[in-house]
Image (cartoon, rainbow, N blue to C red; front, side, top):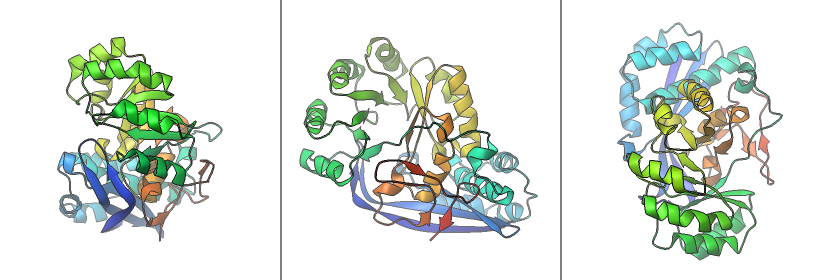
Length: 336
């Protein structure tokens, strides 16, 4: 296989703020694996919260370049096992695992969802994320992109007031993501008011390691609670089953599609709702997420929609929020 690595700086349409940070651009690593005239693409974004940079990922991958380029590729799962055995971080593994899946599908002339024997007859609609800002600017962002489901980022001193103000401007479903900024008491108190305001669920309201607080919330919240920062890797799923109603899987954090498929099955066996979420990323990463749609209850894959300019073509969205799948195999990605 031939390996190519390239850093991209993805510029956002608007400053994106959550409870712990704000940014106007996102560093991203695109990995390309080529074999027999086909190229598969994968993506992993830098993340200061997890102390991951594009440079650190490139250094990891370059350390095994020779082994990668002489690897006898047959399945993405086989390559994933090789990568984890070599001690690469989940972020670096994700970029290569997504590329391997895209390549595998292109070599076989089928999109991944077909290879996995799933159907597009039924699948969830992605939400569109509104970052923390002034109410006027949050409303302007909703008006700029009318959508049936919005994820609202919170973690301020007036969170309920923000949701109440936004509700005056749309009938869309709301999902709330506090990114670990609330206490258990605050979550339990906010939930009935937010439910009356048309909120569907709360995502990661408490700090990731506050398991006692999450148990309290599970028993007393009138809204379902979805784990994000508390559910990083496969081993987290079972513990989340006792403290959450569902999990949000991030491909970059868990190490790609290979472990994500196992996490989905484990979560379902525990009766958990399953969501896959994105980072601020291009259509390379988003198109990989889209292949999982038939297996999901919820999805957050709007990352490329938040960009000023995308770097790839792949899965896209119509103005009425329909997901449009390309005919190309794998994840359907072509770099621009």
